[in-house]
Length: 163
Image (tube, rainbow, N blue to C red; front, side, top):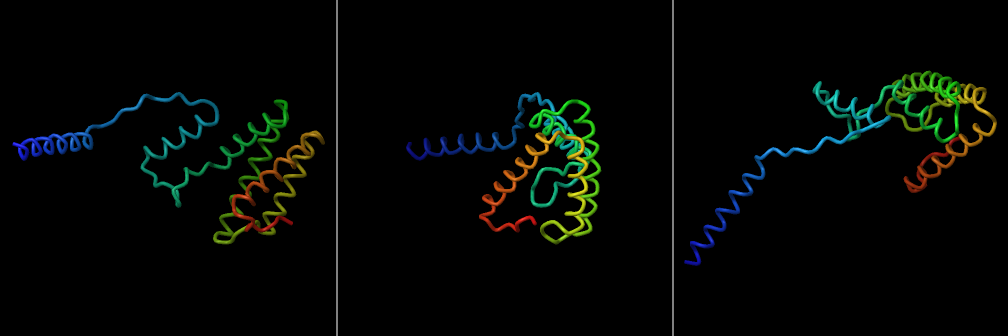
């Protein structure tokens, strides 16, 4: 009697586990807005086209234009940019991201910023300085320093210092 009850319980458990593995799950769609919506759309587009996931399991890479748009919107919010400034900053960031991507691809395998990257960064910083007010540019520099400090802590102080 005990064996037959145990056998019945085991059969039920096995059947329910097998059913749970084959039953498709559905989730309610989540409404995404703003730059997250753009990122989600790009990710979904890549997945439907069957493009492989990027190396290292990271999120799909953004194009230089997407990065510029995202960063300009973030800067507008953090620095209080007006519409004209935001448009000019986005154009500067697009040019910078495009050039940096090219330089990064050329320096594949090396770590840190190459001298060419440092020169490009200085060039685009000069352009940003011309568009931003002195207070906005100072705030941008402070945010960058804070970000750099956070990265240093994240990597246990093992990063190269920028010169």
